[in-house]
Image (cartoon, rainbow over all chains, first blue to last red; front, top):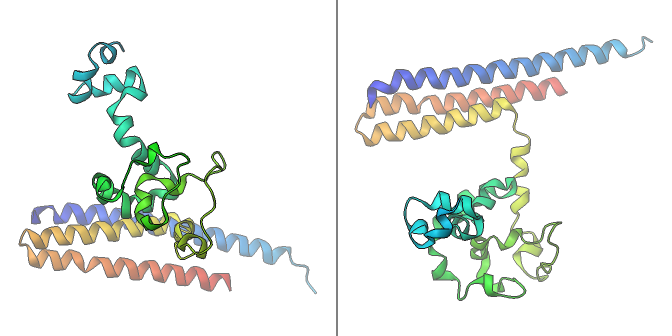
Length: 44
Length: 183
């Protein structure tokens, strides 16, 4: 069973990579929204 | 299609039951024994309850039910059944499509809100893709680590098991970043 550890590591870290990628996309989207909102505000 | 009609007795108790089911679902042993379970599994509000209560108790229902609730009219669980009445899916009776189920008595756990079935699932509505993936990864890591330990690869089990808190900590870190961006 221990010979499957590298394969399992690849699987888990690919899941981890997808999770990080989606989190980064989400953060990017939030950042863009924040920028758009700050641009919309009228300058006093 | 006709096999189930011709040899229902043989078809139901051997490998031909899918044909019996295809011939008519009401004749099928699958629909007799498994359809409440399938309903609960397919119903998004009862997935957690299915996992927690229904599966271990599904085959022991004769121990707790004094009589079949299917023969009751109207179908109301006795109050002393407690949460075991959930094994027959009676909690899902009062739906917009079937409002006949009477309201629970005022002093019951359901009315008091002690039994918060739907509230428990609200947590999962906030889950994003990231959270789900990390949750699944942690669950798999823990299971695989336990399996390695039981197969006597203890060092590998510790090595794999140490990933779980790291992944969880990373998930918490991402949440913290998101919350700090909201402010």
